[in-house]
Length: 353
Image (cartoon, rainbow, N blue to C red; front, side, top):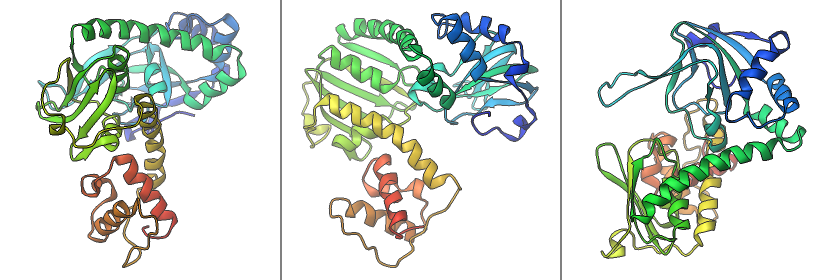
């Protein structure tokens, strides 16, 4: 079973059962990759058998931008061009080429980050694919499989954190959001016990979010019109464009950032933010999987829960006025996760549909 939602052009791909493929070739290629090089021969053999090989032709897409990264690809033959817009070209252009022996999407499989580019076939490609479901089955079935892969990612993360800590000790940290995920950035600043202001900007250099840290703890956060915990949670959701800057000093009025002080311990705040990011994808699939357009089903909202009633009322009014659910975030005063969480409950309660 292939993963993702292939475009019209990718429907011509030919699935080939791995049982009939040369497993030795797949095993040998897997052993050359950093992700699988530490696995035993038996682990590599079981991994190779768990995947599926596909042949793609010129113009086919292996994956599209914003698709969920729910599988790992290993290029066995041919080439894949990575295509996306650049500062020089608003139209998607090739920015890199994947050659045989290279893995695609290994980190994104674990972080859940959506595809940031298109993967297109210039002439021909033969690709081995392992889905997240198959990967999880391997982790359960093969002793120490998960532990061996954890060591690989721990080594990668340690190298990244070491580099970032060197910058953090200089009281300055900066980078592009497409290269650094926010959990790693914030965790690095927390581990270094930093005090200062983390600022996130669009490519236009317009500030869209700020996080104030004191002694390695998140004190305040703002993201657009959101403040406090909801703002912090929103920052973690699929920020792949723009850049961030951390300045290791802050002498201005903290209320200029937010009037809400975050009382939740930072470790709990981060765990909750990452949990919400994972669950949001499920909620969005649940509500938009059949491309439904939601409307208010009743003239007046019936909602007993006082704490969430303002959000439910704003959703009800917005849909009654003809707005789309996905466009209501800025109108309801909550994070995207809260919007979809309450909307899902409203569907169950028969308030919208």
